[in-house]
Image 1 (cartoon, rainbow, N blue to C red):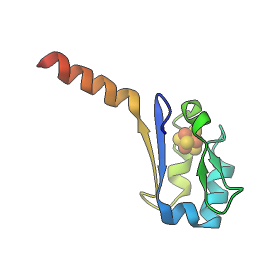
Image 2 (image 1 turned 90 degrees about the vertical axis):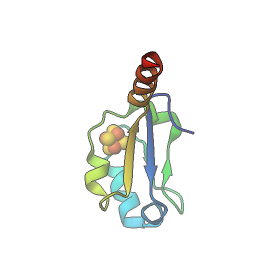
Image 3 (image 1 turned 180 degrees about the vertical axis):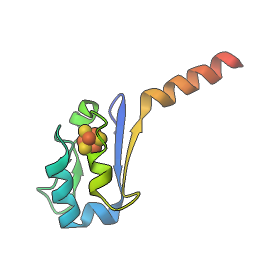
Image 4 (image 1 turned 180 degrees about the horizontal axis):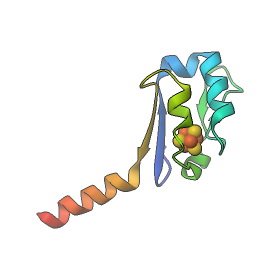
Length: 84
Ligand code: SF4
């Protein structure tokens, strides 16, 4: 389940890669990645702490990590709604 404002998605192949998983855990300043298990886990309770630093995106192969700003989506939806 995403946070209220942010969702982070990691591709399955990257989540299973121990090197990438450890890098993501190490780089994220707010503890959104947990590499202690067999597969990288996104720590849902920390998602809204994301500071949009993009370190995770830079640390992973191209496109393997996506940080979604849910509040922008909501605003766009609201805007679309008010235009109608
Ligand atoms: S953008 Fe920064 S704070 Fe957000 S999940 Fe990635 S590394 Fe963590």
